[in-house]
Amino acid sequence: MSTRRATKIVATLGPASSDPDLLEKMIRAGVNVVRLNFSHGKAQDHIDRATLVRAAAQRAGREVAIMADLQGPKIRVGKFAEGKVMLEPGMPFVLDASRTELGDLQGVGLDYKELPRDVKAGDVLLLNDGLIVLTVTAVRGEQVHTVVKLGGELSNNKGINKQGGGLTAPALTAKDMEDIRTAMSFQADYVAVSFPKNATDMEMARQLCNVAAAEYRHKPGLIAKIERAEAIPRLEEILAASDGIMVARGDLAVEVGNAVVPALQKRMIRLARDNDKVVITATQMMESMITNPVPTRAEVSDVANAVLDGTDAVMLSAETAAGKYPLETVEEMAKICSAAEAAEEVELEADFMGKSFSRIDQSIAMGALFTAHHLGAKAIVAMTDSGSTALWMSRHRIHVPIYALTTKVATQRRMALFRNVRPLLMDTSGDRDTALVQAEAHLKKRSIVGSGDVYAITCGEPMGAPGGTNMLKICRVA
Image (spheres, rainbow, N blue to C red):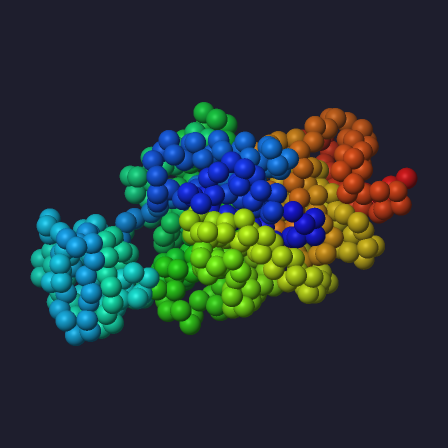
């Protein structure tokens, strides 16, 4: 992993990347967070994969975070007798919640039984990521009658979206609740919640996670996947109830329209950073590398623009889960991130203009950034118990790497998602002066700093108290 790369890489684990040696190589190449997709597989599969990730990370000498991505509601059509049908524009097609037999050219059953209550004549339904468009002509009992506006091949279990949003499916299903228990059994560092509409959805998810994780004394970070039109007007309340968001561009684009998404992406990244939350940009970032050994120019620009917007992480889905070139995809993404970051401008003065900080620990974090930037320091070091100081520092663009030293493995893993933060595990003395000497020795041992280098270090007194950062020291290595 390039020591200069600030943007983190989230890679989805799947059949293409479950070989232990390959996964170790992917972690060495730059994977910081491994995503387990709970839409596929059984509970034991995820437990086994989490064990695989921890073992591969240990061999690679790195700690990576594990993100459990919940499936959410299944808003899908049923199955077809022939596995698929070809829909032509102008033909009628019935979505039938009461249908038990397999589908045909006349219609198909529904996994989502509430659809007839959620739509009315004139509504537009988008199937298979918007590749098929149906206009609702009438709702009769459990049947939604439509006419095909944009045709194509429709196969088993393809997703349904309503243009403009408005489907009432709850964000958390019974399966999700069971999956949360599974994820907490191996202490997943993050839980990604699919299709939240408001803060209440995220608050419920947090309660479920905390209850399931209580016996392990663990508290995961919560990521809200922004993929419903209804979530957009409520972004700030969802952010307040979450530890971060994912710009889930697939379902979101289907509901609000492709053309709207790039501006929304920029707004969401900016909003997350302004509110001291993390943000992941996802969906089709390197899609062509599922089958090709190199990305398209457009994909390179897409990843680079997300980096320049300030995203904490860029995510790979099918590219690493099922693609032919999982390792090469990670290597290419790491190179793109590094190149984009090299072009970034640091504007700390503008960042701090008009801002005030009521907390001592937050003021210390900002002071460390400002001082290190103007001194040309080799590193910024945050001795942190909870990771908050490192998070605040990571919200601002700076070309000085931030090293977060913690005594807690859970905190180290959580910080793996923070932009420009290199989390390191270190046992330290409870005495502040001794701890500072130990920290410098740790940095020198890892060749992070050497003789003559200047670095800024923050810590708290008493040591180990969450939220207790109250000291900034500028050091020159002897």
